[in-house]
Length: 52
Image (cartoon, rainbow, N blue to C red; front, side):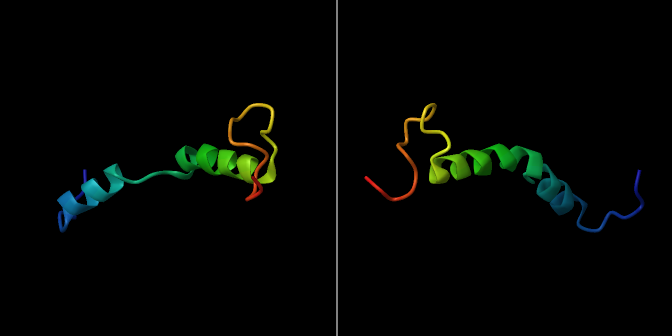
C-alpha cells in the first residue's frame, strides 16, 4: 500500500493504458521486415520499400 494518494486515479489510468516495449516490439519487427523485403515469402505486402 502507498501513503501517497495525490493524483492516484490519474496515475493508475496512465499505467493501465501504457504499452510496454515487449508488446510494441513485434509490430516494429514486422514493419522492418516489410521495409527490408525480408518477409517476401510470408507476407502479402510485396518486396518492401516504395517500389511497385
